[in-house]
Length: 502
Image 1 (cartoon, helix red, strand yellow):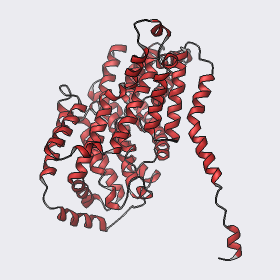
Image 2 (cartoon, rainbow, N blue to C red):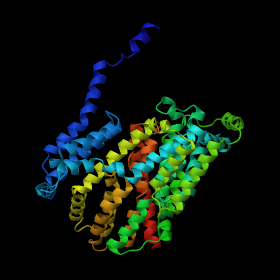
Image 3 (cartoon, rainbow, N blue to C red):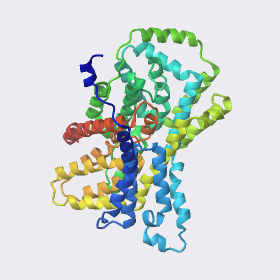
Image 4 (cartoon, helix red, strand yellow):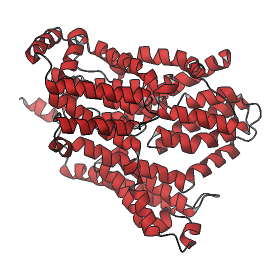
């Protein structure tokens, strides 16, 4: 190396710079909490509700920057709220009741997320993936996909999207559909291309495929009334609050142009905005065909797992009135254990499953706490006051934007629908001139697509986030980009379309 080139080499950053950055990231959640705690309580809001929001905001900041794993951040928030429950969780009226046992009630709230059905369905999806991996069924199905569509990464993205689209009308749980059926299969695809989780090679193809899968799940969840459980809940709330009926056909027709546009363009958008480094590989399909020959005939455990998964899918589609989707998943897990498809060691050693289980359970409890302390109700009332005297069209758009963006505060679409939809509908109905049927359609068809904005926004999100292929900073960045794209598509294409045909 000559002297000039030596002069141009920049010195490495001092170690203290890296330590200082880590320290700032580590302290940032606490600083956010402190800042909000010392801020005067907004008028009309109880002090304990504002203080709870301060802890919730700190947890969200912690999840974004991750000074520690997400599960640790969520658990810390739960423990802080439960220990300081008299100032964060319970109202003065509750504390004044001599029969109210604060310690006992705080603990019940703290662990309430662990009894949530979506949390257990996510856990079941991880066990399905473990079964696919152990039996080689996932590898077999992945190899079949690669054999016919694996020459181009883009065609694999479309294959995943159309697979979700085909299942969506018949599966009223996107966690069951995407997390329990799609994910266990596609998790076997990246290793075929040398793409590994939690590794720089993840960007070869794994990151792209995982992002396409979660995005497809969100789009199809908005496209069909029967593709997401909260959609059905939303219909019941719309009927009870404003007396408007929305049929399956009206829902489908209302979202149709937006749905078609997003389904057709989303894999390509992801290909441009989050490109895989492996784009074309002529040899991979040939190699996949030879690997399929090596696998030979399906084994006993592969056949059993295939039967179990088909049974789960049938229960999710046709038996939701008799058996909770999460219970159907747990039934399949038990059958896998009894038939030897999985061993108990496979269950206990599945660190990603337990990590995601703990992380999402704590977030569900924290999001429920926001509604419990009255923060969501206050937020709805304040929004109503701000919209007094505004034109119906502007009011419609502003309320819709608030409904969409407030999803950052919720760890599930069900919680969002339950807590916020009645309030937004009530505010809208009180504003003269708002076209309520169109307003209702705009709100309810956004429930699926809004799930893309955070790693905890909808049931399958934690599964793909926990796959190891979508780093935290990438997920939040892409969630914001695609969240804005979906929002603009619904506002500038869906809204005018709904006004034209209804």
